Image 1 (tube, rainbow, N blue to C red):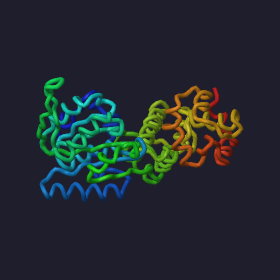
Image 2: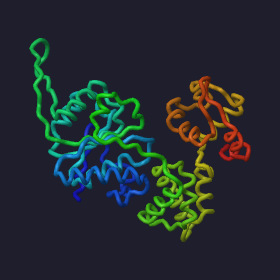
Image 3: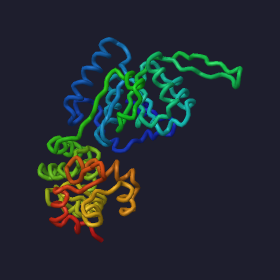
Length: 336
């Protein structure tokens, strides 16, 4: 397949991370079995009808494979894909330029679609339904709106915050799929596949140990695998086992439950400085010296999902499970 099949626009990088590890078919995509069944049926129906596929919305937490699914859709349909993101589209003119340059059947992948400006959202959902874009010609009282016909194309939108999308835009998607966190067994299979691609020798037990520390997220699993690969290289190990994974990830401050330095610092602050809570996000961010958005979007989702902390109407609180985690020595594990 030619390297220029996928192109980026308005500042989006065409050299996406972990490209080497990205599966290119539904069959090679690990996990998300129900999602794969739906995508397989959806894309095959479009191919048999010889029509452009309906628009697709992919939602879910970061790192679960939304971008990969977009690439797979392009591969399966054998059509080129244009790549951009919500923050990259600053003005309606940016979007109009992208839309007017699309080819028949092309896929337009919009990452973080929930961050599109409102005026661009309105332009997009009209284009998605009517396959036209209104171009303003002239200024002032003499300005006129001229409709420009567009070829049929498929929008694949990715979002971590589906609730932020307006209803008119949501209803334009013919297929809405939500990717969920992976089970350890699925991540172990993914780690084994990635290790083969990266030529990292690793045992089955080590794959599972890595999976348990990866927070249910393929992106994290692949990142940690590379760090274990560093350990294997430096220590001249033939095949990494469970102990090697533990030693390598201790250096990178990832504990057996997948908690890192920020997670431990957050739990410690709740327990030691706020007597377990409740405490507001701004106060917590000030104590940790971290951006409130980083705490809310990076650390909290996993800690809450795994029951280490909770949100209440009065603020954040540590749970008994969180206290137990600190009491067995995790608090000192990452101390300077």
